[in-house]
Image (cartoon, rainbow, N blue to C red; front, side, top):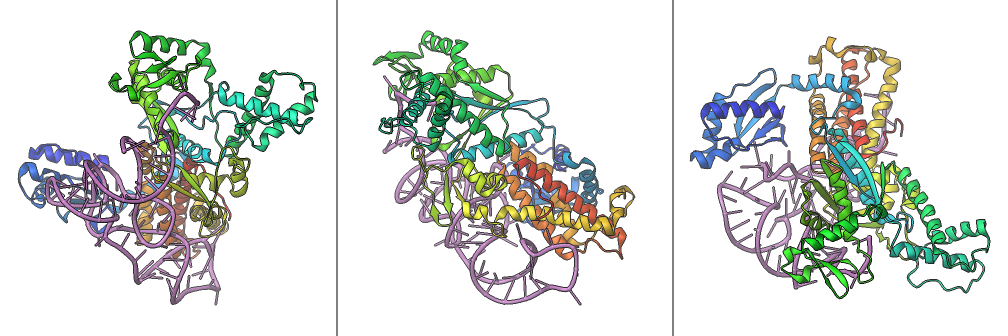
Length: 548
RNA sequence: GCGCCCGUAGCUCAAUCGGAUAGAGCAACAGCCUUCUAAGCUGUAGGUUACUGGUUCGAUUCCAGUCGGGCGUACCA
């Protein structure tokens, strides 16, 4: 519809010899302003040195539109041009929803494009904890959103099973293993204190008894830890419906020499230098040495920056049209250094989109939940999912914009009542299912009737019209939400849809044996609403219950 | 100190590249179930969009400054 409006307005501008501006069409907030409005006339006011309302008048009198689609065009306020869409348009759209079903809302604007989404990417040093939740759930929804606009998505998990953190894990497992026979065996000061370490030690002990007592082969402990932790992580991911296509091991970047190559290239291009035994990368065009960053430590080991740069170059070379990283704000600054490094080597980092979400505060009622990675009472993501369920976990993590801090009220998420915003949406779906069950017995015709043969003019109440309008917005909402990588917009929209439906339900008897024709039409509307809700739920990643 | 994000109703948050009277839910108050799920609907009340200035037809949105909060500011990742 907006496309159509854009076209006729552009034609009018050409006819009047007006300069083409980047005018926009908005959905109006108030029905008295019509369905769409444009600011076109206001944008021209300055250039033409005329009153906006005057220009708007000129535009309207030269505007040629299809009266099948648009019933009225008006000037309002400071110079808005408001378009009133013919109600028939929305009624016809009902046919689209019913025929497209689970395809309704999908678009092809990104068809034939590929995207790579990398997220979660926790190293296998322990189970996923609450801090991983927001990014995890966001990534799941964003991947769905992009798919709905046509992208072919690769879901990727980047991890490192070498380095300090893993050595630390190995030492921790080893110490717990030794403590099974010698309770006084010392535990490393900064070791991983979680109970899972004890479990890993116990598993090793069950298999090998005390045969490793005198061994200092840390590799075995490391491997056992990695295996156990990854199994746990994948179980958690699975419980939230997240499945990665690729688990990319950082070690492979060493094996295929790409890190070596990059290091050499930095050196050859005079972008790095040695100081205090370490290799530094010149940041900020090398003007300000204060900003330079270490890429190889004095010990000879690269910092995370080097493999990260290599990893992103690898992704670029794989030819994706879009490369997305999802990070928490606690890692907010690091990506800039990495992208800068990528740019220094002459790669186009424009295709890389870094999504940074703010931190989460967990609350149980008024009480704030303390989180600490190193303490043994850390709350794991598994505990949360077990406690409140996968749906509520998913919903609460993505219900707010990513740039704002999120207060996650665990008590509220768990509550099965009207206070919980997720139930408002799911209830609408369950309610429709209930109506349809009723109709199965009383108005079975609704399943076989073809809308093409129906008299759509029977639909005339304000609630019906409003609901049909809301449903027609879904495809556009998906596109907008995907374009800004903000799944919470879908929730906002679904809320409006549910609200509109509940109002419709309240004021319009759906199943009425004395008026089969109208009942069938209203049941078709119910089918359409159920479909839109279901499609929306599948994007954000929650279930669509048939009964509640 | 510096960098990024944020400050909107009592609380948690929306507000479509700057648009018309800043919207929802919860909490409060008043109504609505012998008819399809009351986890619902209707109404009332609640705001100087932290503050000060600027840009313009028009600012919650953009710019500058002030105050307040979060995160970072490693030869950890």
